[in-house]
Length: 185
Image 1 (cartoon, rainbow, N blue to C red):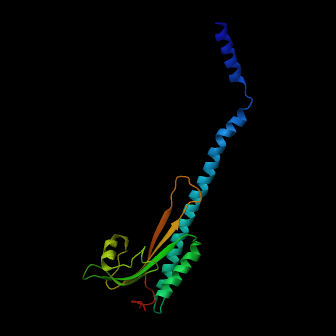
Image 2 (cartoon, rainbow, N blue to C red):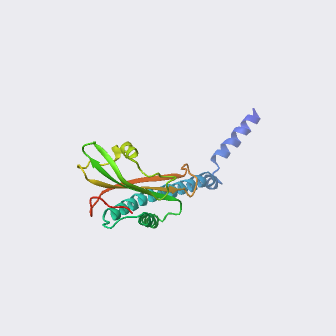
Image 3 (cartoon, helix red, strand yellow):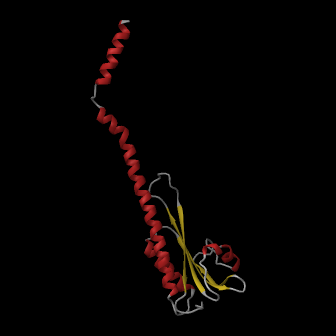
């Protein structure tokens, strides 16, 4: 009985003693706070990279839609450089540019031309592949043309906080402003 009584009083004294509580709490909470800080940094960077990719894709599509001279592969490569500069890309990125025309008779789009900066990752479009992505394209009138600019940007999180590597895909469609049919050379 005396042993139980002494253990009980020892436990009561220990439970009332607050020495070292702050350092114990710090040891428990600090890793959690560091992880939260890193997670916020990574998620913020991911949203920033995605948002920048969207804006750069729209800007490049708008620039191409205003072009009045013929376009060649060098021009597409130059637009890809503009995209990489606008996004500040450190990781690989690639781009596909396609000019399509709507035909009311066939109730579908046909590819006038398509170019890619990396055909191993983004093959050029055909009439079949454009037909498969019909639900992503806007409705336009007969014989109108659309410039479809697609970009892919790899993104790697700075720290592992539950996110893995991502490939951001963006697509922007612009109606041609200068000419109905933009030639490619």
